[in-house]
Length: 130
Length: 218
Length: 185
Image 1 (cartoon, helix red, strand yellow):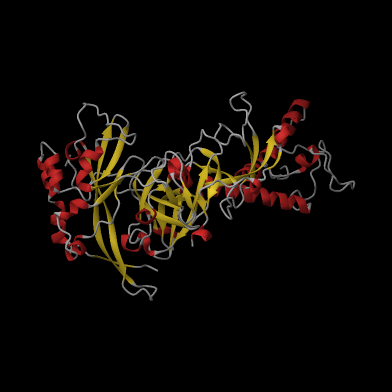
Image 2: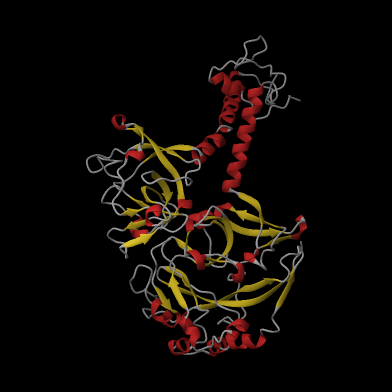
C-alpha cells in the first residue's frame, strides 16, 4: 500500500494533468500545456451495476445497468498516458478548459445527459448460462 | 528401424555420475550399444526421476506460458459469469508487462492470500476516479446532479502500481477498497474465456483498443 | 546396431552420437534445476549498501558482494519481525530488493524521514520493511508492502567464509517505535 497519494477533486483535473509523475511540469511537443478536450483522444469502456435476481438459484437471471467510464489518451514527451474523465466530461470545467471547442467536443458534452434519458432502455438483462 | 529411445533416458547421467544401482551383468556401460530392455520402466528410480522432470517442466510452463483457470464470483459480471466459465491466462504479461488500460488481469490480492480477476483502469502516471461512478439511474435517485459531480475524488497512480476495478462495481472488492495494487502482484492477463464447451471460445477484447463511437476523429 | 539412425559407424559419427545423446540427457535436467531455483532455494549475490552492516559490510572498500541462500518456499507466510526477506519492489516489479521485516500487520510503526506521517498502522496482509543501513529506500519511502510481494527469506550467508552461516534473525534487536498489535489493544 503506497503512502496516501494526493487526492484531488475532479474539477481540478485540468491543472493536475499539467504536472507529471515526477512532480515537474509535463513537456509537450509544441510547448503548450495539455488540453484534455482538444489534444487527447476520447475513449470509453462500460462497467456495470449488476444484481443477481435470485442469488439462491443456480440459473438466476442477472440484471446489469451499464456505466460508461470515459478516458482521454494524451501524449507528452515521455509517452502516452491515460486520464479518466468520467467525472469531468461535460462539466463546466471541461467546457471552460478547452479554448476552442470543436463540434465533436460539443457533442461529447452531451453524452452523459443523453445517457441519462436512455437508461431505462439500456437495462441489460443477462441470463447465466450455467 | 532402430528401437525408440526417448530423450529423457538417464543412462547417460547415471554413468557420468558413476552411479551404479545394480551391478548385474545386464547393467550398461557408457559405450555399450545394446540398449537396456525397457528404458523407461527398467528401474524404479528412473521412472521417479522422469516423472519429477516432467512435473517440473509442466509447472514451469504453467508459470511462464499459459494456464487455464475457472472464473468464479460475481465481481466481473457480465464479462465473466458467476460460475462455469474458464479463462485462458497469458503469463507473459506477469508483473504487468505489456498490460494496458482496459485489459483484464489475474492478480494476487494484496491484503489476503486469494487471487482476483479485475480490469485495469490506470497504470503508473495515469489519472483515475477513486470512487464509484454510479449509473445515471442511481445517481438521479441519490440526488447527484451535474453540478456536484465535479467533486468526485481523483488521484494519479504512483510509480509501479495500477488501479484495478471489477466490471460489476456493485459486487467487487478492488482498488476502491485497498488502493493502487503493485504491478508485481499481477499474475497474468486474461486473453480469452471459454464456456463449458471448447467451441464457445471467445477472445477478450480490450474496449479501449478500437476507436469508440464518440471519437474526435469521427 | 546404430541407435540414432545413422548407418555410419566411424569414430567421428560415434562421437557426435554420444555427444548429442549426453547433451539431451543434460538438457532434461534444466527444468528441474530452474524449478528448484525459482520455487525452493537459490544462491544470490547482494548488491548495494541498504543492509549495511549486516550484509555487504565492506561495500565502500571493495567490490566484493555477499553470497546468500534465499529460501523461497512459503516465503510470505508466518513472517516474523527481524526476518531478512527478498521481495519485488513495489515501485519497480523487475527489481528484487532485500530488507528486514520491522512491523507486521496490525502493528503501529513510528516512521522515519521521508514518510509523510509520524505514525502508520500496518494494514492487514502487509508488512513494514526497512534496511539496516542509512542508505536505504524502504517502507519509509513507499509505505507498507503487501506480504504477497515477498519472494524469499535469507536463511544463510554462504560467502565470505568468516561470516558464513545461518542468519540468526531472532537475535536481531527490535527497532524502537514499533508497537505490536497485542499491546495496542
